[in-house]
Length: 312
Image 1 (cartoon, one colour):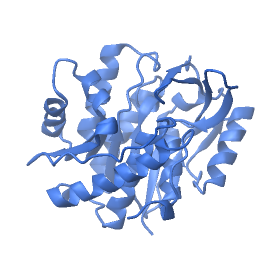
Image 2 (image 1 turned 90 degrees about the vertical axis):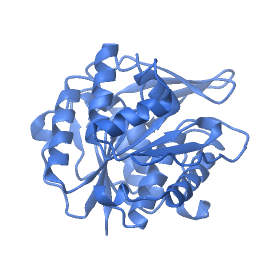
Image 3 (image 1 turned 120 degrees about the vertical axis):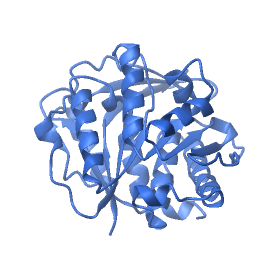
Image 4 (image 1 turned 180 degrees about the horizontal axis):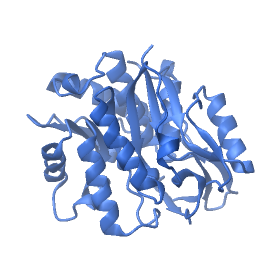
């Protein structure tokens, strides 16, 4: 059975909004993506550095309960990442944290270079783990080596959270562009692309990424839907269902999971196949991704849909 490996942070979001008590919720963009994949009945492995502290125990118990396989994850002595997430009146989240020295960002080459199961076809990377040192540089080397092996379809979600990453702005931009050039598929928000290149349109930045090596760039546009850009064309913008948004935590991660799940279901597991997707196929896939993301937005926290809760 084809499966997915997600690498990145698995942390604790301390979520609070005006007039309500705070809640400690396992999260982190990669962990949310792994859970969303699992809920969509995709066999999912999570490669994470989790702490031996009480938060780490909570994180591992949560992921296991969600049927995420932790075979490639580690338990280490560094503390868990903890992020404060303030829910604003429009449902969006404002984040703050000090992540220096946290478990998620200490990857070394020995920890990364594990032999992976042959049924792993897609590897998803993204978010803070991509940028925070000392692990960020080792992640980049590992990701490049994966591409050189030609055995995997590589997906990248830049998920820019600067200055939360605590790194120099120019270095984060450089790393985001480098990892995007390695990846075959990039799923990015319009805000990500505007941040990566403030002086360019999102479509100019997408074209730049494709010229650097990416095969397909999928851009989420919030309540305006999504669009895909390839080396040959730009798809028609698909719309998102209008709903009352509870909050947007995990919406982009659910979108990523729905995208990857559909690629597996359509047996698109190789770079040559993803570049052959036509406009109609991409528009259908994006419409389904938006449907899944809407479910997450309709309820509190990163609570992605189960497979029976989507129509595709």
